[in-house]
Length: 462
Image (cartoon, rainbow, N blue to C red; front, side, top):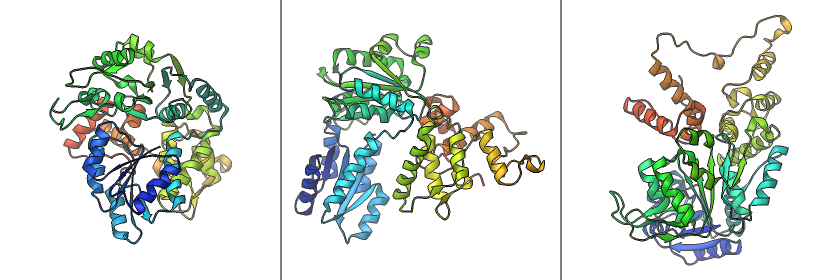
């Protein structure tokens, strides 16, 4: 655990840092947001940032977002500074820690970050078999390719592999190749020198250098453009990188992991992925099964996500009723664990009187069995000979008179709403590339449509 503290390092702040050290964290300190961002750009890295509530938290969070540096931010301040605490949360901080620091609270925050990144929650024998294999190969430095449908937990497994490796005390750096624009991905991977291109306001090390000594995860690597794949292959083979605008290669020592939700062998046959890079990545491969193939994990994961989002929203954890439990077990979960998490998030927000009902879970594309269960529960089953009637939310509106473009737009936006704005997940469900989805969303935004952003609730259809 790498903790970066921003602000004056004396008094209560120094005490908080010592508590973190005693709990196994590696603590670094910077006095200002500007110095902290420079440290992060230079490859210092952090798993958690704690910042003085009196500093410009909005500026920090904005800089992290614009420079695609993914680190959770926690604010701290004197306990009575209530307004500042509220403002900090609104500015992007995930938590507020009052001072003087409480040892148990500091330990809990550090533990929550570690659990969020490394926990593999499972019960199904299929996952137990995979984790046994993962533990066996984790201590090696072999490159591992993790495949599986979107949302199955490939990054979670990658973090598990790192935590069980001999590099566990070093950095774990993740880069989502599908989330970075093509023209910026080379800089993200290999870094750049000041002035290398428009917007390069200073030297920044890439993910290879940042992960030096530790593990680098290239998430959704099959989305990488073939022109960049050749440079990646050289970096893997030579264990050295060239910064954009740089004059000399830089040696790196990393353990490489990669994930893909596509059939890479098929991508190779179609000319979209280099065969030599595929062989270099595929020293050991692990395929994660979809959630529908490990049904015993559904309930335990649902319980975990309900507890997580109940705590995040400061409400008692609601309980699914039996009808919802049967719906979850029979649902196809095309979006896998990510779809389950999003569904439980909505269920926590929409539950009434501490009970999750079919109305609050709002599953899409529910199985025929689940639909039959709902009909029977409403007294419309075949027991009285009546034909089951679809509920309003199950009835599709007529598309007669609509253009194909309009139908496509509604489908894309509804799917994006269902995934709470997650572009990669939505693209997978729709069967299109992330690039195509981005182009469509840009067009819809220009036409005046409201585009769901990551984390937003479902788009209103009223």
